[in-house]
Length: 117
Image (cartoon, rainbow, N blue to C red):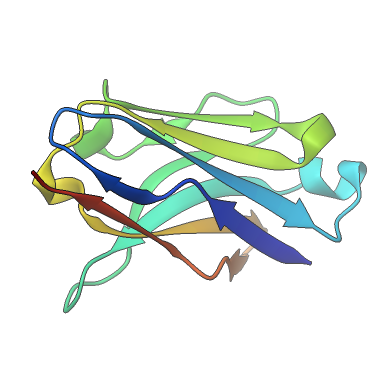
């Protein structure tokens, strides 16, 4: 199973981006068993949770993205998305897609998001 991220890039402050993550090599029923999420990391800092979403449950957000970011999952397409609005330079980071089953967590390769004028 691979988590394939897309949608990153450079955006101006106040702008929007949408990240997508496709779970390649996973069947639909298995995908629903995973809690999907997005984390981010900047140089010299620990990876931090941005948002997670489990099948049939409400999303969970870090305080610093509440009201700006929206996570969603499309189980039929085995995809999780992160809509990011009102971006600030502090949102600049490498964003990682994740999937978790019980205590096991797996990562995508990461995708760069840069917010700069």
